[in-house]
Image (tube, rainbow, N blue to C red; front, side, top):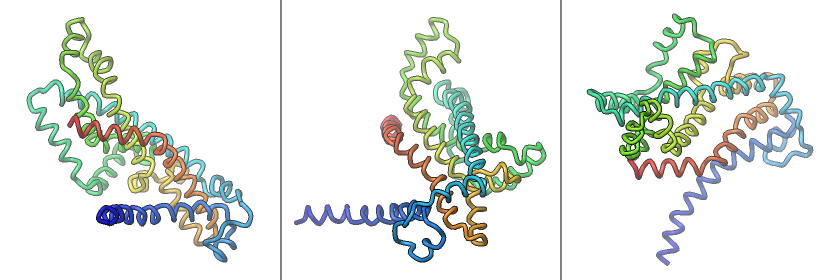
Length: 276
């Protein structure tokens, strides 16, 4: 009896939480195939006929297509840049141990505690003075830099577990420090790199506020900003079906991406916790 009560106490909150998460998603998917009349007359029922025109309208009429491509661009470039900044930095802080490296490492970790909103206004004027406002490359760089402390935090525990004897043997064979980093150390921390890249990519894909502030041309909007505009327009143009379809287009890649790589995320976080 006690075992049953304990099991129920664990499962019931999980079931309630699952319903709260899954039900809105199902409602969103069903609504994406309905006409406006069906959405208002029977919001909880299945569609009488599946209306794929909502997806065409969202993609073409409300520019979800261009914002989708913009989001892929900033997500991929931001993830790559973040790795390019973080891997050498982590190696220097964790393995080279120069004077002040521990202080610098703590500064990186402490920066994770600072609310990002405090940096938006200085960042806006900095990019404006550099003529980099409304620029997808600049937005990608901002994304990358914003996640460098988190990526260093993830990678440091993995790099700390790499045997130093391997680096010393490679150095004795004449390999340069960059060769040791990219040919010896980087392949051995692949799990940490994959984990950090997945988490960063999901963060960049869902980011909204920095794109809203730093982008000024509608053709350069990312999905988050464009969905906000579509939500506003739907109120005046009765484009509720297109709104649901746009949400599906924005959410499905994240769900597929997470479903494919969720084992890597769990594995990486678990190994990182053990090694850290």
